[in-house]
Image (cartoon, rainbow, N blue to C red; front, side, top):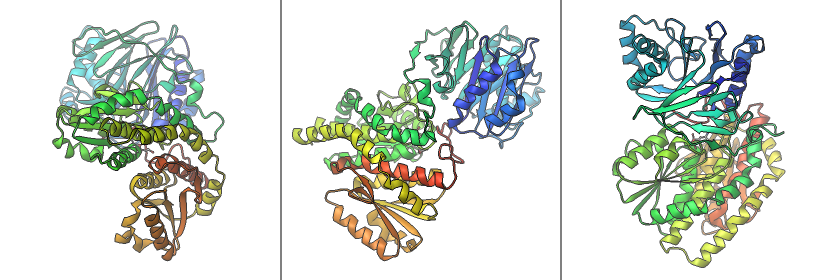
Length: 592
Ligand code: AGP
């Protein structure tokens, strides 16, 4: 999704803005641009389709002189990636410039209204209406801030907005609704960004904007108001505990590889949320219905939670948020507990799903990575996985944190409902403490690299698993698809013979995820069925081709996914692809 940067201080704004945009590249984008004001009050607006480095190279910001500006990386939603559609966007006069992350839903109406008043539009974007609206209201309002207030009243949709104007050239005006925005507080300089890594090397102190917050940032002042009261709000200064180096590669070839190596820590950190999870479990135990709701990888973590609850005879469901929000949500009530899972806390479908469920009086608990994100503010209770910043688009360490949290939460619910013996609970809890060490062993298994080499040119992959490892099959397949662009399907192993077995042949590799327990023999039969059709079978699990340490079958999804993360990573690299920035994907999907 789009990334926003803003700088005002004594440094060279154009250079700083590009440096900040580089740190936001992980959000996914197709165009980049900046706007800066020079001493004579002129606004300059270099922008283009392409990578931040390409736009930067053409501009050579080191030769420019400006101390205030805004930057933007665009992920196209309205209008194709192009120079003219790249942000920032200017009004008719070129004296007001806007960068925006989100979607203005009523932009068509606003555009025709403004066109009738004589405004001339250059781009196909929804964003440009904001610049013209501010221009329109500045004709009658005394200050830029009051023109911005009037503008915000007219906007429907999601936005994180930065505005600079030659009318008040020492300020960056800002506003947010549903799209993330932070202000980094420096000494004699301030920063604005969609996410903290953009300014972590400069400051760790930040203000997090809430919905309908707006205001301005200058060299030494930050004023934030909220549209509901129009009064200034006193914002808490958050101390960001992530170091700038944590947001960098630290010697690994890619962020994804670095993040896989951080999985043991992610597991350890997720375990530290036991108190929050216990409180949530107590509330969920009183509900008659428990629903996990999430998207993509996070949904797979929710599925694991569902299987664990069912294992203890507790009914549970797991839903993809984009489906849930338009149908299942209607069945929500105050007897339902919804557990949303999200790394970013900004996923549009997940946000809509929990907002809808909340309206129907359901209890909302969320398992989140990004502190202060939108989901955390909507939820009744939150448990953080504390995995640290995840930069690679493909989620790895956050998935480990999510699966572990869903596992622990489900065990705690089972205990609160008296469905698990104290002995079994203690056994599982103490085994959970061994999981970080066992993940480390799994990550260090050198055989994965060899298996990746042997399968790098395979065109068809099937990932099969049963019961609690069915989500592992889905997640293994998703990871391979995302970063290697090969066809990979995740399937419940027992379903193979109901159709998909027809496409198995000697050009197919089947990843069979195994675990000890009641379905082990059935899984072995499924493996034989695949082999009999000529498919190459790679087993995953304890004492398997992709080997992981032994653990309790209920905890096996946390270990079994580790070699699959590594396999996807190596295959992507062997294919000469960039696993950190897969095509067509964005890290946080903040639009529907
Ligand atoms: C993960 O590898 C994917 N890129 C994607 O499925 C992701 O998990 C999904 O978009 C949900 O994101 P969230 O956890 O930030 O809500």
